[in-house]
Length: 427
RNA sequence: GCGGCUAUAGUUCAGCGGCAGAACGCCUGACUGUGGCUCAGGAUGUCGUGGGUUCGAUCCCCACUAGCCGCCCCA
Image (cartoon, rainbow, N blue to C red; front, side):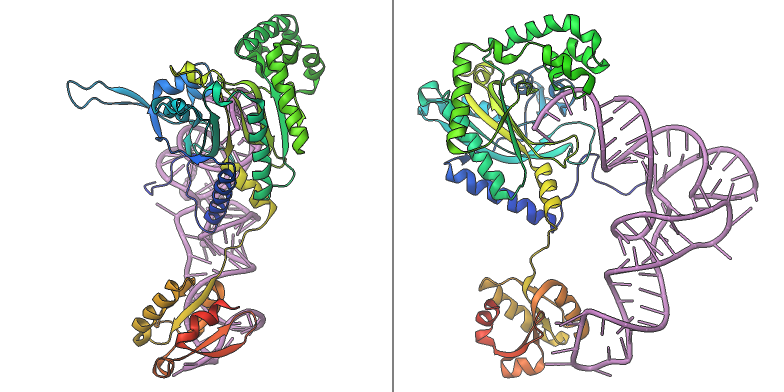
């Protein structure tokens, strides 16, 4: 087979679907702007070390899902460098924060990004190797208030607004606290301890998780395991006073602004850098891939990357899945053009292009036909693509009076050339 | 990375070890300056790729590739 195809896990986005993508991205930009976020665009590839240190060496993302290659040295003096297509964008944003010394502004940095990310996973519906994320980060020095639970609540409230404005119905917000960077290891140790006795009674996956990633045991969906999971230590009991107060304040702020949520003590996130608040917005109807977006606080990430203390909170939204959800909710239809301009006879083609130019410059969406088409064909195509059809034949060209027919009503009128744009605008 | 299901026309899908099918869509005409409705006619194609079994394979077998579902993991 010699025909070329998009490589596995990648795909082309075509009209009219791309209209939906633009709608989602425009809506996100509009909402983010109201919260005074600015856009950041980081490179699509970075030094491999950034992800190893930022995301976590032992995570699946880093250990087996990255597109990594050795960028060859081109000169004796140049060293080769391991590069990686970004599997997520938070590490890149924090790298940029450090590199440009944004902390020195003393202000909170509120940055959003929209763009492709890459993970070498088994493709599935809503899960691709090149996928798109919309995300944002609030990060800054502690003096700027970056640790405040108000920031957590504000981000969550913004997301609730965004999903509403996107028209997503029936989303759910689940939140939890995984504690500070010292709480977490203490809790994991306690969990391992408890699992030494309990794990053998559980499903095979849990027996494995107990060894490799004990937090994931909490996520197990096997019904028989649920009673056992209930008996395991709860993260809430291992939070220090600061973390407890922080989480309570986040909840209180959400209550105050009327954003509904569920606390799920079993919500744990996979990436190493998360501390304290973690959250997920889910939606039914996505099958096992039910998370629309997820995120959390990462108070130690900047320092882990060699930067200054810069606590932050952020999220990443899976745009592919969001689009799926929107498509399931409403059949999309592409907006028709304002008019289909049909030259009658090839002799009228040149004049038609001139007229189309005028109308387009007046802001109208015009589909230009071809004088080589039979009139019947022009009508058929016009009816598919536009609200109205404009006939430009020999007579019209001579008289300057054009024929315009409305497809919906069937009404046909004569319109002077100069008044055409106005006539088309009023429907 | 693992397991399962699937792959036939532009699309959605039937089908059968012996000439490749339907619906929708598309093209042509009835209707040389009027669409939708109707009618008549037409073309749809490497039956995913490669190999094997067979007189003969789109069909059976194997491998590969891709999609989907689940797992792992995660947005």
